Length: 145
Image 1 (cartoon, rainbow, N blue to C red):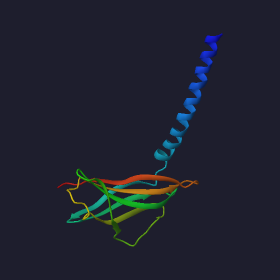
Image 2: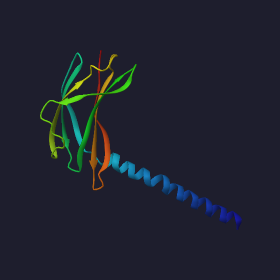
Image 3: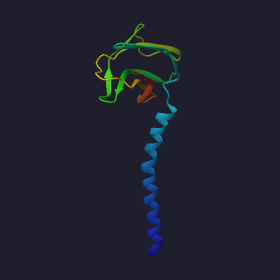
Image 4: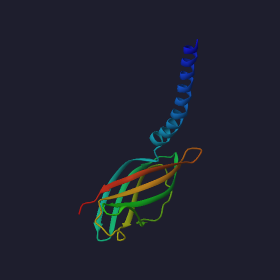
């Protein structure tokens, strides 16, 4: 009888643990894998000059999310990731309608003191009825010296 109670207790503890571990994982995966503020991102133009990078990318905006912010980051071996200023080359559009879109920005890289290895453009959108934050890498571009 004691062995039976021990087995039932173990099964109960395992079930509770599974619920506690699996439910947050399912919520996280639902947000990160099903919710896509945009897709089909394609780099159309890229020009790197001394202290600036101009890029243009096309993408398809989905209607489930509202744009919140965009950030540009550069990576160097010596300094790690550095947030760098950027400017919209067209009129500032903020949130966009669902469908085909184009993003044209100029990224100021003059603050970086060392050779750069990579540029990332990252976004935050608020998605769904509860305005869940969804952070994604919009573009990741290796930089050559």
